[in-house]
Image (cartoon, rainbow, N blue to C red):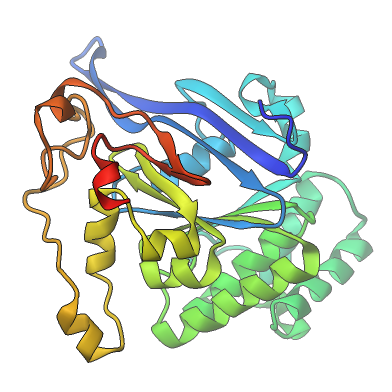
Length: 330
């Protein structure tokens, strides 16, 4: 564990495999390699963007960090404490510091509970306020996310998607956490509403000095909100660096392919840039390729890519990449 006091979260060799069972006696026949050994830090007050294709393990990473899934192996240090080894009651204390905003605002709110009960539930569960204090806190939180305090007695079905996601944000803020995992919080919303939610998250971060792990697949949104960006492919982080460095000098072939697909508003520049078209489909996480997981779709793959897993190395100051031939793009 790094001794750097600026690091709030340190993930070390995190692995999350989901076993596959078959037959009457439930015999294990394999495993889904959702997260296959990743390491990264999140500094206090920053936003780390985590991007990649659907199914690459982004959401599983977030939920494993929060110990909603118990990892197969590895460590998650929060404020210097390894969460993986904690008992249930010990972990309960840390849950007040770590919260999550879920992807689907239509499924993440209990339709049988009022807005007041939904937002106040964390305060009830952790027994940190009286009934009157909870009511006051709920009204404050609704005001923070720019909703009327008169909404406390209404139910989720009475709200639009954007309003529901604001309710989810208010619930995540109820216990005054220092770290929030945003699991694709705008992907289910209209484009016009997406900007409002992003601006709200930025305002709240500045006001309360929040730290975000922002999971998304929209690279333009990640570029706007993130300080640093980690690119994930088939359970592994293949590149990690600052936002500006990633978008101007990507060093991994997968990152270059992702960025070449992002539309840009300048038609002249768009016509000049080189497109990187990936062939084939993402391999199955049940049986990932040997060596480099990306080699089956990589335009520059060679024999060594099948034989040896590339090290996740620092090629430039603060710029980490897992590719045998990343120097070609340096």
